Length: 237
View 1 (cartoon, one colour):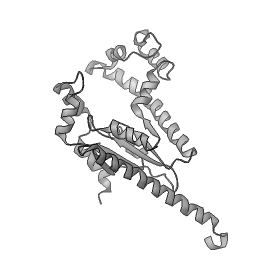
View 2: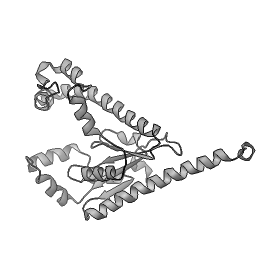
View 3: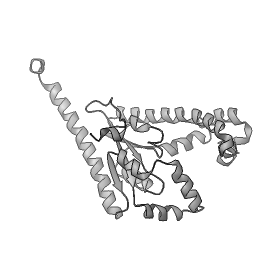
């Protein structure tokens, strides 16, 4: 079947439990727009980039360990980690060992943040949560999801959007693409593909339909569980 292509999915979700949906997509594909719509439809969304931002911010859990790794030079005046200062230690081929150390420190913190988020949502009875993870496939995180949604658009559209960003060049765009799993491969690994090359209202309607179908599925599972609990013991044997 086609399942081998898609890579692993979480196998631990039992009927009625909160569904975990991974959201990803290459640069310029419209993922942040889709995230915004998901929030508007009331879906709890965990943003990996925002989680890292918080870890690096004043009082963030990564500040002290990063200071211990690279020294006072990485601190900004407000007590946060200065990205420009940090980049001197971790960017470029000569710093690859440093980058590995930084990633070994950050990834467990982000993972803990992510599992906290899922646990809180589950405890609150949410039918569905979304994990917005730019490098979902690159980091093998589809194994933490029940389904994966890839946001995509035609290459020319992607290129036009990215090159319109301030400070972006063809060379930078190429460099970013070279680090990301190609769009075609992402699409082949997805459970759902959202095409943002269409008119925004069309894509937005697709996002809404996806959310509602997930909610219907979980509601049906939960209703069935309630019915089974109501049946007398003898009838269940």
